[in-house]
Length: 301
Image (cartoon, rainbow, N blue to C red; front, top):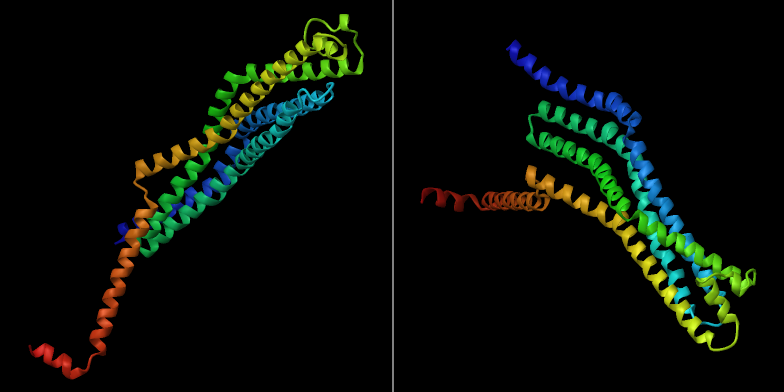
């Protein structure tokens, strides 16, 4: 008898100790570790890239509107509209940064201790439903904690492979905006503008056959710039929105596959059990509500 009590006390003590260690020891270690700093720095780098792309597209759009005539106005409007896409990426990055900041607190200070408390309740009440809920909550907590650094790591790897391309887009946009502004303002003479975009724009200010040729070259240049901005926006959307979503879906699938969690199936099973119990209760109630003579006759038969 004493040995059984000792085992029961040990079963209760272990979850309590795990919950206390999670809230007061593990939480502090996670907060001081490089996990939060690494994720925050990676997200900040992506945020700076998005802000530079937004500023470059806006500057290019403004500069294009300063060209003579309306030759590239549609391109300027498209560049201005791209700020909405970059805003979506920026919101996703700030959401991810917020999740990094709160994940340690939510998991180790709240979810794990609550799971341990449910385990203790299950042991004391001898009901498996509390133990099952404690296990599921613990697995969910660890998956929630691991999914964020996993998505940040994968996003950083993809972004590094495209960083050079994105940097070239930003530099091209800034240079073209500066050349347009200098050429339109007349700060450079045609012979000083070089052989690039500045000379083409200077030709638009002159009369003669070079206007048509210059117009075509300017439009081609900014069409290519617009396509590169679209490509950069698509890359940032994949890095900041699609990859985290795919990582979350992968973790959900992995947890369900490893631990056979199927919330919908469990719900339907519980619903079937409740309906069966309700039918049995109604049948029992109908039998009891019948007249005693009828029940006596059925018993004799």
